[in-house]
Length: 397
Image (tube, rainbow, N blue to C red):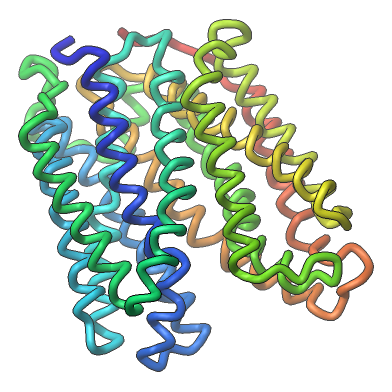
């Protein structure tokens, strides 16, 4: 290996800063789009176009990182993210906002390259723990990002985007001077193009297919939750929470996820293994989604979202770790590109389905409000749990 644990810390810092920038714009973007006359439907399209671009470009960035190395792809993608945020902040028409969001989605596929970097600098048996660092970075980003965005929005609606652009630019400078390349030249793939089908063929069995489908299904269920949770707590007569209180709940989820994935996951993996954790995580998520509509007090709600945070923290890094071990070092970028592309597709489907299902409950504010989307999500997550049981682990050095 050409990079050690210090490189793991550097890539964690890089991804964390990237996700803080992403989190900064979350509470502001819908209001910013409304400022340009966007309807709720158009706002939904604006949010979806990011995932559409990730779906298309995550495998491309992953394949490119297998050919030229991780460092240049990370550097170019973070510079692109900075330019996307800058264009958002300077936009004066809605179509410029869409272009900026598309640029951000194209370069947002750098998460798959960061995951490949972690696979390069960790041993196979430590892979899931390393992937937990990505989850921890997401947690930290979603704790601090929305809070910073809320503060910056007091100056102007454009200020959070300009702040995110500055963070990304500083991140690119730090990466250029501090982050070493992780993929040795002898492990880089020839320049010929490899299709997604060839990625699955390289795995040599059904393991990668099963893991990818499980990851996709679980992400659909989780996306149903994340897209509707704020509306659920706002419209429910038991809570009627505003954006600030929902921000506190999301911060709690992020902090708990960061603690589990950044600190405890490695111990869990060594004790019971990746597959068992993936099965347990999907089962806990299914149970939590099922009881969520029955939460009528803050105490009950906190117990349920604790289960959601634990379940998600066990599922995502372990499935990525298993996927990483299904192929050798020369294919890591493409594997994570395929995984992230599937997750992006799930984040297009999940919110659309979740919003449509929540509309079915919109007049039911007293009796199990939210049962339609969350019981549907629970069934989907139960399917993911059954799929996880069928995963057969295989190790590539």
